Length: 616
Image 1: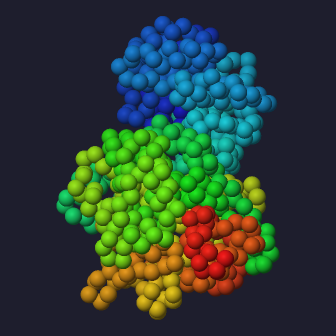
Image 2 (image 1 turned 30 degrees about the vertical axis):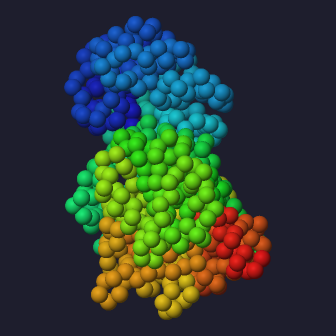
Image 3 (image 1 turned 135 degrees about the horizontal axis):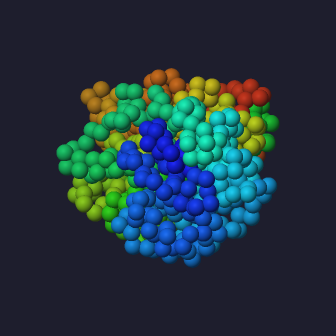
């Protein structure tokens, strides 16, 4: 959470030493905090904001140039046309525009619409006698109806006494786009003279336990033991074990991915597409009949309702925007069940970018509907003909392509596998799943944390997204469900936790099914999305550390569970997700346990498999 201290006049240097993110200088003569002095040299990273009330364009421009302002805050009745003209002015560096709206008991959010394209932030202040600095707050519940994805500043009489209220507010979904807390009159010895000690206490309280806005990009509140460290390791697993020819590709991404993901413009475009194109937030659905049968409160996170039919699109939206930022004009991907391939082809069609998808020949045959979708979307589907001709081999082919085309091509990996930074980057993009679970569960049950989060795991992207915000919370049980195929000891399985040993696959150190001499064992599952011989390094660490409970489910158990969900809840799950539903014969829950299952995909793509298996 960022901090802005407004109303600088007498001691801006002392305030700047506290390293707020913004300092506000008021250029309105009627204000007792009106500024007309010299701004001292500020530490790097602090933005100077000029605050204006119905000033002329010439006056605003003159102050921007005189004081080298990085942002302007328009606190009067400035029109959208005024904002547009200011935004288009040819300054040496782009100027951020913050448009202020005052609130008392309610607010008509339609007022925001004309400003959507002409300002960078909104600021919500308390309506009072003066345009600002009135010293009292408005009811933040008014923001529950906030319809935009534009980040906003929260202002209006915020003082030390509001720390706990802010902490509660930040848990609410309407706080998702709260970018900055703006303080002024409650931290003064007199107008324009800031109380440094009180500001210091407030900043410390603001950062205590990391009051953070929820973020679709998975900004971690802390770097806990179950998140990737700076080198991309989860405990002993992770890293980047890559050939020298691949180093420039991954290094370019490693050096830039966090910076790009934290850019406000990137966040705004990402969130806008998740909302308007993907259809987020996805529902958290209480499965009444399943709950009654298995004696627990079972909720389903409906990722199957995302555009393209699965969670995969959360990641492909993020990575296509990343590729554009890096100047790439060609996309490659690998896919097993086809959902990632469809999601990649979809975003490439959306952005008008060339797309090549590698898919194992066997998977092409059993996932024909998804292959057709990819081709309709303009993607070229290239078969992998080596090895088991499934996901592992498709990944091998994609990596070869990337080595041969390093300059113009971005590889959209579909899971939390591969060399650093892919596991961390994909997990961040997918973390929107657990972010939504938290506030949705708060609305339904009065608490953010379930007793258990359950997800199927192949490479593990849907699971990483469902677990992300709960990884370091030991009160939330993490259950990972793997594909046992025809049985763990049958020789036809993909149960990595039971059969895997430490090894290297596709650039990452993880648990891997392999022979005594290190040759990769061919995996098998009736589910095309779970027949991967390894698992993402996050999940390897969860297993080895004991943080996650891993359960292996056979083909027969998964298919039976999928049919049961269809008959009890009217939802046909993807066979991958059906594995997660089969846990109830392996683990018993208490009546009051809240169990959230990530329903990662819908079963349209698997209808032929269901038909053949059950003779429908």
